Length: 316
Image (cartoon, rainbow, N blue to C red; front, side, top):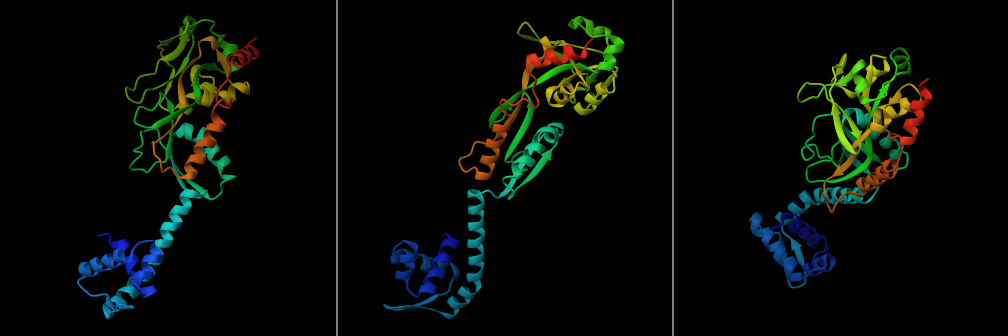
């Protein structure tokens, strides 16, 4: 027996004083209403109505039940309607998962811009580099930098992530600029330590359409991408910095891109979410907003011509 439906039918029958009227209000038959009330009586072990051919009246137990459940049912109905309304309209919570660095630099500005036109939507950002359990954390959507998500989700590549070899103008003035990949062996390097192995991550380049890797012996090795970038900014050596972190510094002339013909764009920045037919409107609108802002955008990506121009402008 569907207790919630049976109680709702009981309340309507008690308020209208007739199974026929309750059936008309609910769009069903009097027989169905009578059967539902009878099942509820059997379930509770009490008689709820005095039945006559013209009218039904509540028993003492029926009146007590009506007084007990009517306010609760009204509250439940109001709560359910609020949830339905929130799913239809621009209100409610969106839970997002992203890496710490990319969450701060890419996702948080998008949230701030989106809320200017959707102030009734709130956000919960889970910013951590470790994999997040999307089901346990009730994640609506996530962002991933690197390779495409492999689990069963819908994913969109929003823009390629460039791996750009960089140094400061001051470092290059003191040590010169490498003109080939082999020249890198003569330079101090700043590296990134792989979380899994603890070893420096090899630098990645594109050479004649193929991906090649070069190992190095860094003078400084960091376990955090932002710390790696700041070590390069401090003039400690040459480093390979992702476009999300490097683009603004390159455009400002603070970092100089090197060997730009070998920049790798194999990795990407992805938006992903579970495939579902009942996605709330607020989540769908945020997804569309993000895609419109980042697809084809240049905030975190430099064209080949721009890389060449920035590199040439900074070198003597």
